[in-house]
Length: 375
Image 1 (cartoon, rainbow, N blue to C red):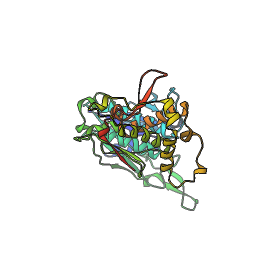
Image 2: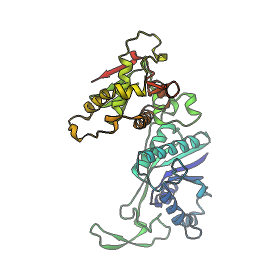
Image 3: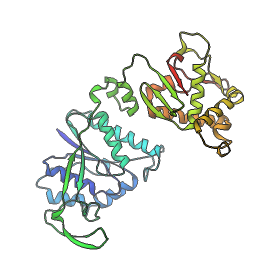
Image 4: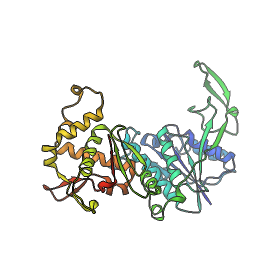
């Protein structure tokens, strides 16, 4: 069985050697180390851990070389977050970066858990909280019985100390700081590095075969587990959320106003058509929306905006739609729905389009009998 350490890391690469040490203390061997990090995190790993001759990782190997085997760890096993153009991201700054992080965690977890002869040790000790959360979520999606989720606890006085990477066999003095910032000396033999096993519930065994052929987003995986006799879409204006097959999604008021408008069009369609899913009679062209329905969309937005004074609301954007910001809102609504309900839900509940420009019309595909409106 090949053991793979899959860890997240920020600007404190000490967590990698501390995790190695903690695993070693519990007689767990590691055959390969894969790290998920940012550009700045990668640079810190290369200069502090993997610098030839002086890297702390090599010092760790030297001290424990008689007790551990060779480990596959180097630049090729450092996985750096990249933007849509392939440029490495220096830090996780917004929701888009966080989504890229989650996708990377899912992709690597899917890849390493696909081989039955591997065991994956997920380490959530490093990086931002969002990094550990994403890796833990990936473990819950694809983890198996032989995989483990770990955290590492280090004595507070030694944690994040720039010169502490693991307890060396020969203890040495480090200058520490007390709560008031006063310096004092303490031997590294007093440092405690503890491996904490975190139980987690995996949904892998409940996933259908097609969901184990390639990685999917969490919303799609969770949606695949929902078993309902009837699929329902609920737009809840009071709670400012969209509910589909039991999953809930909060949406920004401007986007929800436009989405609610299209849902209302479908719900209010007077045509009796048993094949509503394939009918597009309630779909509208952009010119008609901008010319005849702007006020209704604006009224929905004002209702969602609550007690905010009208004079404080922008007279552009959702209150004054044009072709450009309509497409922008439509794109962001799609991203919201994808994030909340997964790829396979889009065919039913996304704002779909039919026809070629300039005769394109827009609407919701889902059967109106499966739509509920709460206001």
